[in-house]
Image (cartoon, rainbow, N blue to C red; front, top):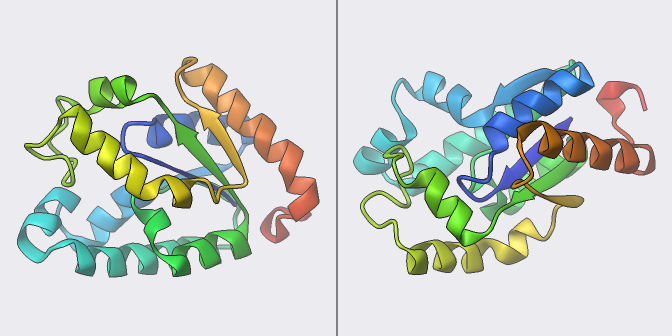
Length: 177
């Protein structure tokens, strides 16, 4: 398994789909899978039930995905890195690549997206910087980091290169070694 983590707006879903094509693997958008199981958008869940119950559902979905027999590229939500259990799941199942982007790029990519519950109505530089600072240590736990500002295909290729470079050292039991 290849898990993509990173802050919202770093391109996990777009880059993940492209990387999956390059690797010949299934692509899984964890947030889309969670929304399907919850029967509502993540933004709606946050506004009606809160973040803590969502994080429980997120861990459950991650566990399900990690157990599947077919290796995949998994785009995780920006906050998946906050739970130690999620790191245990990802590390036991494959490699983790963190996508990054400068604050200005993140703001540009997310400014018209109301589906981002942690930024809803508060998209300003200081809010983005504060959330990035809160999560920086967790994002740094990834096996590799790739900046996502070089274009979709180029970024996907960098992710695949990092995976191929690291995978023989860590192993990927679901991919046959």
